[in-house]
Length: 205
Image (tube, rainbow, N blue to C red; front, side, top):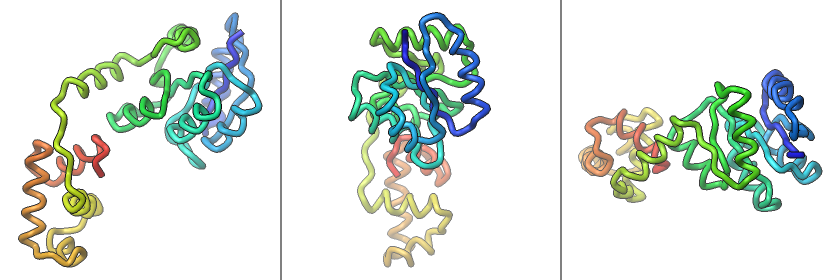
């Protein structure tokens, strides 16, 4: 029997997943958790083979919980099950050790197949997620931002103007513009909004 734990901050989602999975042959839904922190504690007691992990939750997100659980119990397999598929979320989950990344519109049959594949040690990815990962791997490695460039761009992300950034960092407005031009060149973008979006997606700020 595959010992399965469900982690999601929405009770209705947990109940729905339990209803989908607990009647499946070979699957034993041993418990649930409503937050990342609770998932870490319950995983110690329940010793699940597979954990379906929501990504964004209060009291510890799914990535942090995945990292902590696998540090204590590396034999468990964590499958992220979420509605989010940004590059940053995917990379963080994979780096934390997740064995899979699936979207909540998945069918029951495909979810069961993914759980079985994870137990066999296979990686399970939603098709769109796999495409994003492959595209990211094929893309040229972006030049990293300097600490000052990252600082300037972080202030842009907070909505500050060039003049306000200059005041905040005790540099001239012209120097701020110079830093931004370098950021644009490194990220391959032409405006502030695209720079912030791209940097966030790559985890640079």
